[in-house]
Image 1 (cartoon, helix red, strand yellow):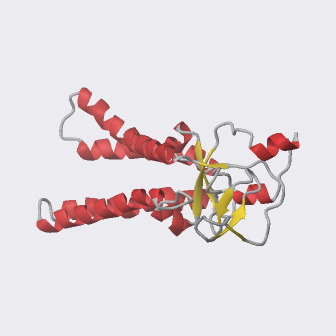
Image 2 (cartoon, helix red, strand yellow):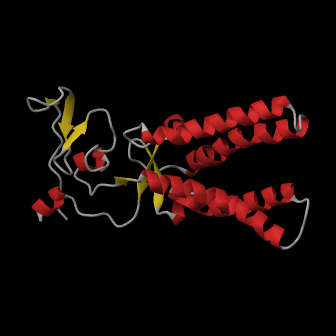
Length: 219
């Protein structure tokens, strides 16, 4: 597999007639990419990999990120469906705990890979913004800590103020936060959620990677 040309250290301006801004030539695809981004804005290759001459890792697509998050939620809700089919009524809290327990056991087994159950299904992986592997501790903080921060207030308020205006306001606020967190990937060139930025992480695809034009030229 061929190596990549080093990324120029000096920025350049776009050709005349195009909007003037500072950018750089991607060492992986030789396309124009925005300075300050971690993934090339032309080919989605992790720029640190290309600069160091490594075979690049590519950003996970936004669809893959959405489907992975959806899959994580469905693992929990699927347990509730099984309980419902068994005609066991009034066990909402049990559904939640059983589903969460299964998710946690599964997650504990693969956290060292930088994955959640949903990410494993969608072949995506969490890494640090410097390209290094996400530690098990970081994964627990990012996944379990974030979910606890979102869900615990909802559970507590629901128990303390059931059906009240306070409960509805808290639910609405949490819903807005979760929605804003997810929508952030559409406005981030590195496809980061808000909690990605808090924990300093990126999400990459681990499906078989296509060869880039730079690799093909080097063969």
